[in-house]
Amino acid sequence: MKRIVKSIFCIALAALMAFGSVSVAMAKEKVVPVILIHGLGANPVYENIGTDKQKEIANLGLGDDIASSILNNKKLIFEALKMFEPARKVDEDALIACLKSMLADSTLNCDKNGNVKSGQGVINYWTDSLANHQDYYKNATVAESAIARQLVKEVGAKNVYCFNYDWRQDICKTAKDLNSYIKLIKKNTKSSKVSLVGCSLGGAVLNAYMDAYKSQKDVKRYVFVNPAIMGVDVSRAYALDIKFSKSSIVSYLKCMETAYNNGSSTALFRMIYALGDVRIGYGANYLNSFVKDKKKVIKLFNEVVKTWIGNIPSLWECIPYDSYDKAVKEMSAIGFLDKNSGLYTKIKKYHGVQGRIKSNLKAVKKAGASVAIIASYGTMGIPATSKASNQTDVLIDTKYASAGATVAAYGKKLTGKKAKGKYVSKDKTINAKTCALPDNTWFIKDVQHMRFHYDSDATKLVARLATGKVASNISAVKKKYKLNQFVKENSSKKLKNV
Figure 1 (tube, rainbow, N blue to C red):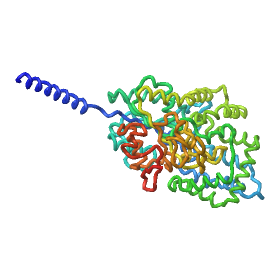
Figure 2: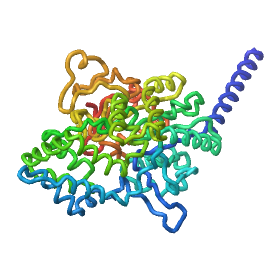
Figure 3: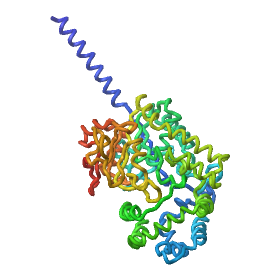
Figure 4: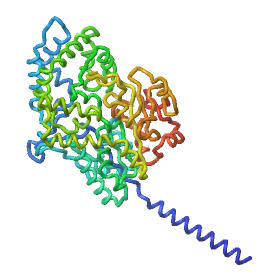
């Protein structure tokens, strides 16, 4: 009997010691560092860095208030308003000259080889955590900084990092820089892995990073937020797919009047909308006649667009995969793109990366990383191409951000076989079955591009997926938060199942 009691005691003691060891190990387990990667224009870039002439380069070369830049150009407004009166003739040479002069002082463009010009770049390359950069997030209410604030709330500022980069440069170059950054963060934190959150263009950076460095297995979780991973259809303008219609313009103006919570451009949208349907129709007709004249289009591209943003690789790299060949053909034919330049070499390389997005997503998941993709929908495309009827988040097409969902046109519903199955939204707008990762992709209606508000359900979902508070699959989120694959944000910033 004593032997039995002694044996039981020894087993119990061994179990207690084992449990104690596990408890100590768990107590010492570190939080995986989370690195946030922002989108286009979300991080300021500067010129004359380190000199007394150092200054921020205005986003798109037009300043923070784009509407004011346009409205303050009286000659431009004078000529533009003629578009809405068929009896008046637009002086197109004067119009192009106005646009050219308005952008003449912009230093935004890269050099002819697609490289950021000497003396330009970012000045806030932080290799330390947000614990030392609280001004970035502490009062943030929306966009990437609000997501950073939410991440801080989940795991603490000492575990959250921001990879700030010059968003103009080649995406593959940024991915290489990200790889170095990850190595440094791992070394400084003594962590074996990191988690990455890529927003908008930052999602394309994650795509390029996966393509080049996935075998290193340095990443525990990938979270893509409205990512530009497969392009943006408005970039089809480089393929000279430029088209306007009254109906699409009116619909877009109605949407954009409130899309950015009465932001700086609201006045411009309201001013155009106030012209009325008839005059907007005249304007659409004029613009269509303008873009049908190849000589006028060539002049606009070469005298305005090329010197303004024509050499920025990241903008080229947002061209959808299936529009790339035509874009290269059209732009090289008019002298806009030099196929012997370093710029062409860069965008050609990324085109290959873009074509591998689905296989890369599947590969990192198969290798053990968690992957989550969040794509918004509920608004139409920018009314400047033949794809204006695409379902978008205001900027990025939902089918591209989701890595391949089958999506109904704006205002329409899926029909037939496309409208059946467990991956179809109840509003019959989206079938997620064709996504690269249908069980790891969420769709949020009415959260427009990067309008993720602090402490909203949408932002909490992003942060919890990124920090491992919930597994990155549809069933886990449904079980824990009662949220399905298709949700809608209401006026209280709560998510409700569609």
